[in-house]
Length: 259
Image 1 (cartoon, helix red, strand yellow):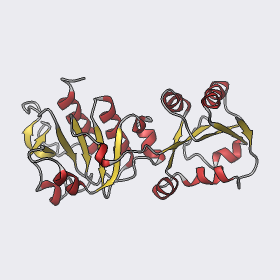
Image 2: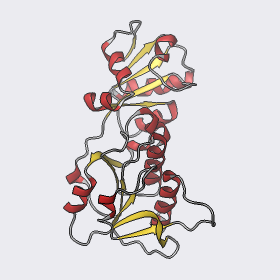
Image 3: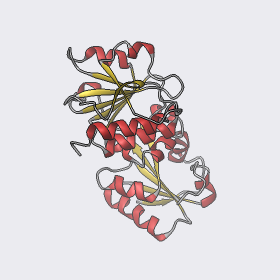
Image 4: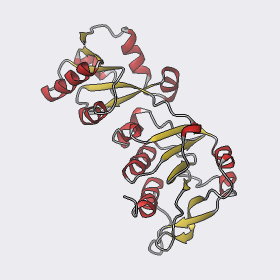
């Protein structure tokens, strides 16, 4: 149902404010999705715990809120000034959904197809773009290692265009332990400046692709566990590409036969 809320001390509004950080996401097992288009897509397959809507939202936004009510979610309608304290976007469209974190266990990740391993990806924009590419090009799962940013903070959700709910994601994973747990011979391929060029590389049927950190690349521990490395050919004098760009190119190149 729709409820008018005037007090910033409302319990659900207080929780909503805390979900902008990793700590808040982990403590409450909830995350924020903002924007009517992303929320509309989310409603096609899932139900938010609740939504918060500005009382100055446009009619197209209120129609999405009405859909959420029909699905069983409460919509908290708040004054625009109160809503602005919940959103960190510059030009918010007046609707936020509070969604449950996906319940995914490491044991439930089938090692079939391409598993994307993110080794200390700290920038939310890069994280979100890599998740978006992984979902778009048909990766089986994304595993964000320890030292990576949380894949469900608002900046990542926006960069992923909400697709962090459309692919299996595990985070704070000990990647070296996960690799060791796989059957012998499971290929682990690193994205590095020196390696076989992606144009000539023939990916195996199932494998893991490792994208290293923006500052330091693949960590020494994970590098020792690689089966091989692949690289993207570039013009002379160009040192490297952004982690999200290079990762997206490699994911597409490896998955294009199956799209």
